[in-house]
Image 1 (cartoon, rainbow, N blue to C red):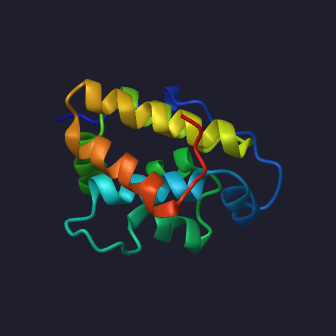
Image 2 (image 1 turned 90 degrees about the vertical axis):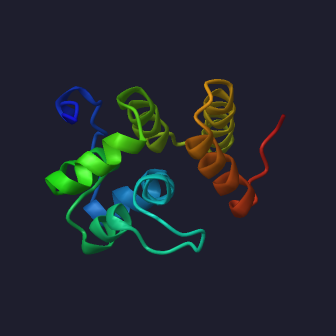
Length: 137
């Protein structure tokens, strides 16, 4: 499987240091979610590949973190997460309003259920539940 070209993903405009930028946006929570979907083979939460990239300070946003994955990791990512879904998640990671972020993520999870993408849907909805976000229905 050939990984999609990430150049077309919208970059986030940097407003500060890489670490400040990654933690100010929702890049880290989305990275945790993607790690769970693509790289975790257990139900126990653990630090994943993308999270480590952020903690190393080598990426200031999710798009950059994905570009830093090696070819095997990218192939694994795109085997489990479609290009369209990944583009949406990258977009959500750039959200700066908490209620909008959680509502968009909830709608995304519900859409995955409707499309029969149960593994992704379960991870997204489980993540929302585990964080305990106050999402309006």
